[in-house]
Image 1 (cartoon, rainbow, N blue to C red):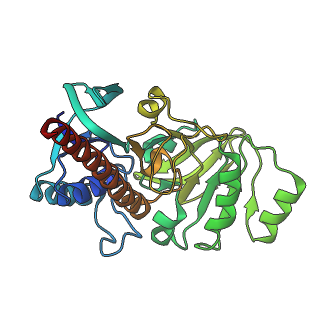
Image 2 (cartoon, rainbow, N blue to C red; image 1 turned 180 degrees about the horizontal axis):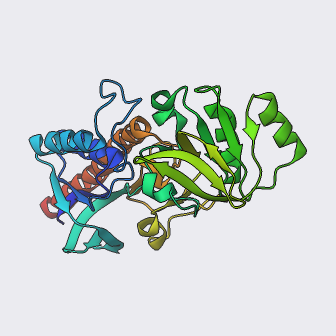
Amino acid sequence: MGYDVVIAGGGAAGLSAAVLLARSRRGVVVLDAGEPRNAPAAHLHNFLSRDGMSPADLLAAGRDELARYGGEIVSARALAIERADGGFAVRHDGGDLNARAVLVATGLRDELPAIPGVRERWGADVVHCPYCHGYEVRDTAIAVLGGDNRPFTLHQASLVRQWSDDVVFFPHRIVMTDEERERLVARGIRVVDGEVARLLVDGGRVSGVELADGTAVPRETAFVGPRFVPDDGLLTGLGCAVGENGWVTVDGSGRTSVPGVWAAGNVVDSPAQLITAAAAGSSAGIALNHHLLALDIDSAVAACRVVSTVDA
């Protein structure tokens, strides 16, 4: 049959599940495309005992742990998952793998506002998560730029005010209601209308926001609201049920609507931070092991019945 479990995605969720399964003496392999979402960030936070570690070092430690317990990692991108021989065939850009069950932990991609300078400074002084980066940019002159993710951006503007007294919200192309504007102003946030032309950069750092009319507002940090797009093609290709919000639905353990298929991390949970994704991977790993256990028992019972019939 090949492996007990093939895991697509080698981030916090995928590696956490893989280590748990390997420690459970299951044959597990991780397909890792080597493109973690948090690669642009220099440090990670809110991960107990790992605060300030680089994302790359966290993944390296996870890979070492997996290898210690006999788990495998293949540097490849999973391209498709198909049902095969009572299990699954996972096609990747280096071949095929077979497994009794699969976990998809391929994360999401951040679609950033099309404002010059945003992509170039992304992960440095252009960020999106106050819980990940707010403390590090505390008390700086902060800009919050309006984007396609309207509810997230408006909430973000109110939230980042906790880290600085100097926050300016640039609605950009967002048309605000009077109530929305009133609430931001009451929160102590200045609202500067007009289309944003670009971020100004000086000495390799954000120095301001320039509007289409040429007005420049000095700023040191910019928060943006990306549109979160799940990399869920492997799941939807299998026919996993999708909710009204357009995201693949899972239960508390990450189980999808397709038997034998689990998902964990940002691919099904956009707010999940590293520690949340790791926890989801652990939960999925336990559920996967229980799923395999039930298959093992069913197989053993069937075998015993065959022997009993022959003996009779």
